[in-house]
Amino acid sequence: MNSGTITIDALVKAPIDTVWRAYTEPAHITQWNFASDDWCCPWAENDLRVGGVYQARMEAKDKSFGFDFEAVYNEVKPGERLVYTIGDGRRVQTDFTPEGDGVRVTTVFEAEDTHPVEMQRDGWRAILDSFKRYAETL
Image (cartoon, rainbow, N blue to C red):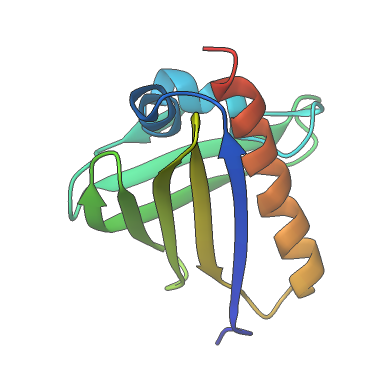
């Protein structure tokens, strides 16, 4: 079903507690969970426990297109790691590793077969970059 794994990462210049809260709390998720300024995340819900569900709506600001993202947590280690399975069965792992005066956020996800790997990497990278910019303002 998948075309291998893709890894993206960013060094976020903020304390681990700030990075973790920004990444996991719905009020923060809605501020960064989109790949470009013409998109938004109107709502997010996050039951941060093994078996808990993460949901977020991502849509174009002009309402021309949008989708709901949903996943179920397989592993939750606060301040360290999140592992979840997306609705289509692909797994995603995100690690939070203190590094210097910041936190290295590394996400490894299983690619899907519909879109080119480069497109998937660029999309997830853009969202992670949006997260980095937001978290560094807190």
